Length: 348
Image (cartoon, rainbow, N blue to C red; front, side, top):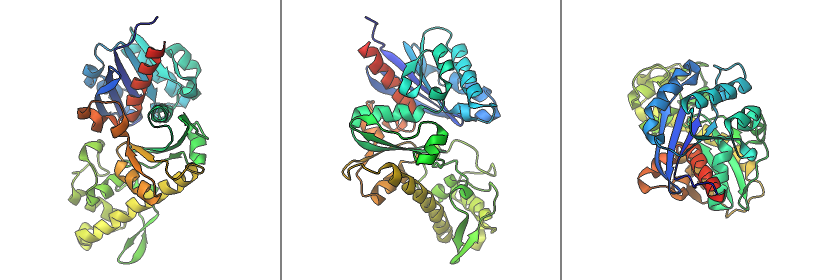
């Protein structure tokens, strides 16, 4: 019988962030998320792996999932998967390594290279599979910095309709909007100013993080990338950026008025997510809860209220030490592959 793995590290290699967790005794005992703008080069991933090394030190098993293959540094997703698998092999030349391949389960690196379609952007499937084990029935919503995954879970099984990014965009299971990095013109084409809908400047002057900062609902630790103008991440700075979107200066409206503009953008984002969630939730009993993960749980709580469903925080159900629950939820896919790999080891 295979020796049970006592320390397992989980990795979610994204195009904008690296998430790393450490599981010991079947519980997450450490978790961290770092900015890794892959579009600027693979050195960002190398640096982040260096910085997070204490988390995976002495791990008996390293488990990986990824979405970074989508980065435009790669000519295609296949090339992206192959390149990231190469990075994994180079960083971890010895020891057991498993790659999450969706419905194909965990596979070795060599097999993963032949299953690039299954491996690509499969992190949502890993987290949903863990939630299925923990909760049975749920509408699982994971809102990160850039995207929102919405997955139905019935009778302890993931019942997704789409699998690839393209397929899930069509089914509503993937909504390309997130809590911090989304451009404002990605959620609305206009905004109300003095009771007039003003068309937006079609420029990257501000992000949804600015709106959420103005509203006071943003945890600054979750906004890891530079602001649109590279300037300070303060309410004053966010108002200045927001003002440019409607062709104005910050002084032209009062802070409460800018708050109303910010609220408009957050509301438009929520409506997009609500529309998609209504499609995905079709057929789920009304007493089935929404389980929310990621940095955008504030928005997911609002979604649950709107859909008249009970909200359950992923942080409250994931097996983890209490001290790291807050970090384990934003790093949900890394938490998931670490724990799922542990369950696999126990069953072997």
